[in-house]
Image (tube, rainbow, N blue to C red; front, side, top):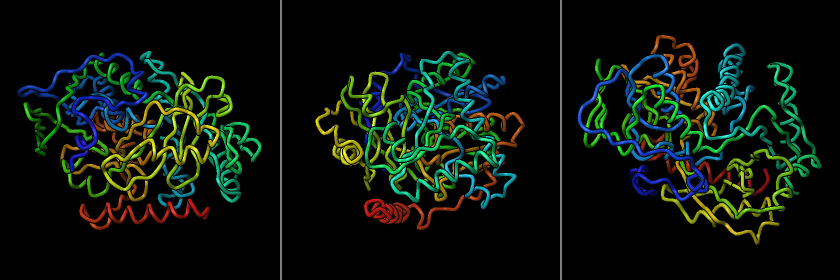
Length: 433
């Protein structure tokens, strides 16, 4: 099943609130014939566009190939949260790589947030960085763990942006009675994800990168001079950067064995007007502690953008029904609110939930599998790959040093095994375990 085509119309953004409010970006012509470049980037999401921008700024000739439109995939459909740290917390990382490298990975993640904010400001992008991400806990034990972790980050990493919240504090902030407490991260934030992708594309073009949309990559020939093939052309280059994430398919089997596409879903309500203050008393984003996480924020026109729900197939389900159930569990007072937009998208996860940085073959680099933590980390990944092409691979190699296990069962069984695991964790969510 080709996820580039199974759920979406060719060359069109999904009917999301993001697409309805996107900034103008003229379509880029498809690749025709043979071209040469220093670097060919496959995929025009955050990873690929950041790589193209930073490479072009360093003087490399860059061609970006996108199957549909800039920001078509997860980069233009996600919750927009720019979170702190890596996808796994520092306790996990200290055990996995030791304290020194765990500190370096924390610093890289902090650099990633700063990079997003700097790029938005420096290139006058059509997007605003809104500060604040709250974490809402379903159990008292999770509240204790969350507060203890905030103390650890302050003590061991000097991070002082986490504000602990008790039950009254979380309720006052997010207007829901179901959570026992949590925290708000004042150093994190959220953005309009598609407009951020469009801003990266415009910046990359101004720096000299060439973007071709409607140019699905069908085949990759690796070697001293890799050749990237589309239906109507090819790019001969010195380096290839694979930045297709959940839409990589079988283009590079060594990456596909470690990175699995999954789907997620979001709805947007009608504008809530004065009721919006009852949902969020501050313009922060929120994520909760369920394994199948709920996440939400208010849009600039006071709609609730709520993501969550489960679906165990690659074809999108009835998204309104899928997401309304967890949304009304959190906000039963919105039972009468109209849903104006509903959409799905494909992201990618790894077995250990850390991004997969790898060199699958000579002159080919890949970064993917951000596991729901990709707005900042994917932007950073593009920069790290650009630096590696230019001869400074320290950041890329640090991230690549984390062992990435293959999914058990290979391409045939990995999805059924994941469904079993997600069913188990979903049951634990429902039982409150």
